[in-house]
Length: 272
Image 1: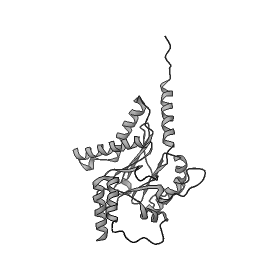
Image 2: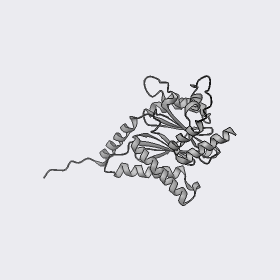
Image 3: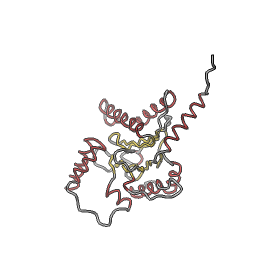
Image 4: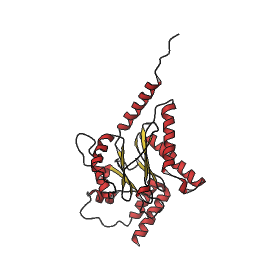
């Protein structure tokens, strides 16, 4: 009878953690930054279909780095959890803290007890409040650890290099334009040679407390993103009469039918 091969529990946990970290570092970074009117999410992502940042509930958004199919599964589970809690109890009972704790428990269990490989993901859950003091942000690692986000947080890719760059440029209470430009500049300095990231290489979204709708999440795309980055054309193009429908179509992709209704209502109120 052969002696079974023995590996200590400490070594198993170390190997699983190293495996997850390597998987997360292969992707591009995503940053979460608090600014004067809400919370900003910026990620290097040229795809329009595969999002790193998404809405979860009225005031809550989700950002992730790592393996797409795994964090997309977690995002969908979070949306269902929030919808169910809001339906059974009250919409005010859905909080970012509760959702972050739920994700932490799930990831911690999968990391320590799962028979397969650990999830190669790192998550952020953020909730915008009525005032800057009420804003909340949580980072959840692959092994279920939860930490508060204070000011800003970078996940995935060369996060240490991007974090270092943001530490030197971050200002509390900065405007959206300043916060966005600092984030994009930091994301472009994740390697030996600095890069200039263009709008079509970026995914940008905000939780905007000043938005009059119940749902505070919105994406920043197209000419608006170019203007904020100072990369827009000198003259804006003529208004497109099909723009409201196009915005609604994109909102359906990003946030469902309610997102389309919100976009059309916003367009109508701006025209009046």
